[in-house]
Length: 96
Image (tube, rainbow, N blue to C red; front, top):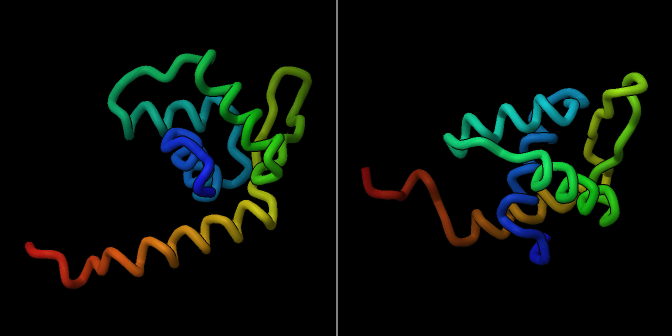
């Protein structure tokens, strides 16, 4: 996961938190988080990169709509990232 951009990691985490979300659902979640518009020209190429890396699978819901789902490798990468983060950030010991 170290070779992903922050945006790609956010995509991966968003997909992990939803049940086979379609592109527009992912876009809406990230727009809420970033508090700004996410353009299709940024969203879909980055989703395709995650698919190409084997972290996400892309399926067809209907002729116009694709869905995205984490692969086993994607789940392992998130778990490894969280373990790495926990070495450095203990949220219980952060000052209030």
